[in-house]
Length: 383
Ligand code: SF4
Ligand code: SF4
Image 1 (spheres, rainbow, N blue to C red):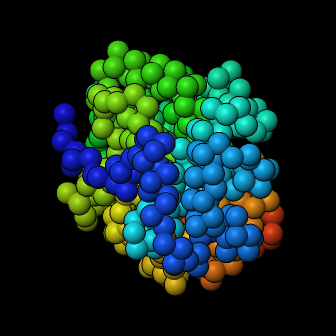
Image 2 (image 1 turned 135 degrees about the vertical axis):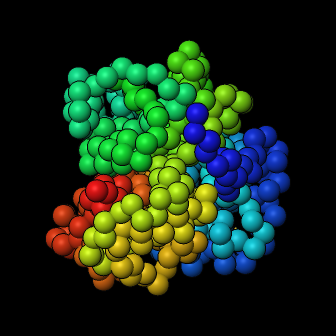
Image 3 (image 1 turned 30 degrees about the vertical axis):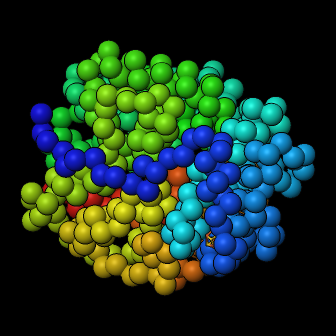
């Protein structure tokens, strides 16, 4: 088995579980307001309730059993968990975890999730994906006939790449094959279940996660490679949060491809293109994967044009945390705001959800941006 580098430690390794600790941690906020200038939803809406500071106060009220208004509920569910607040907070308050625990508390008090969340969850349970895709077409992206194989490494494509951003699935598959990684894919992959967890339905997420873990164990899978930042966060943090040890490690495709290319940096043909790399929140701020993606693109011969807010300060695409399905207009405004800050037409990123949401907003607003998943550039550069 080819060794991978040790699974890195990300921001989400700090998890808080007990309500008392949540209230304690939320209460240390000094109301310095440093997070306000960075908060995606506050900056977009100007609504104080949609800011980190007020979300902390609202979470405490929810845990203390106060009546919950529709605005309070919305403030817990329209946060895309972009973690810009956590990067800015001098006290390093675990704001997104507190928001999440408040969602769970709302579910416990029978006040959530919303009907829209429930419709998506129903789709996941019935069809094994979060995007209403037909399971019979799940492998339509596969560039060759499906061959059942065995490996300790699973390439888990995820719902978005399998159904809506198929180029991310096919180019990730092809690049990993061409770089000589031994891996398997599942014909009936199913969903990682992140949406269920994000909705606050931890009870249901636990059952769903457990089924996946048992299946992976029975297949001898000890590591999972994913192109999707949502799957990455879910397998790496949400599964252990709910189930404890899972028996597998989790690696984003960018980390794996970077390691494989490092061994053979002259392998690639150069593509002549100037692109802007968009840092996805979950593997950027969440994992610190900034330079690997840029180095991959440089090895492919692209010129990189940075925007003012990049890396740790990178802006959110507005799709995460379950907000796109429930607060579509807000998600679209966040995406449009980001696109307007990128002068370059060609934008590359390492998250299929960013490709999808930014691509959708560009089309709707006629902004003329071309969104590309990073492995497409690598595939085009491979001999
Ligand atoms: S995670 Fe993002 S949107 Fe949510 S409170 Fe923090 S900065 Fe605001
Ligand atoms: S930056 Fe931290 S301490 Fe300051 S208001 Fe925001 S959450 Fe509170």
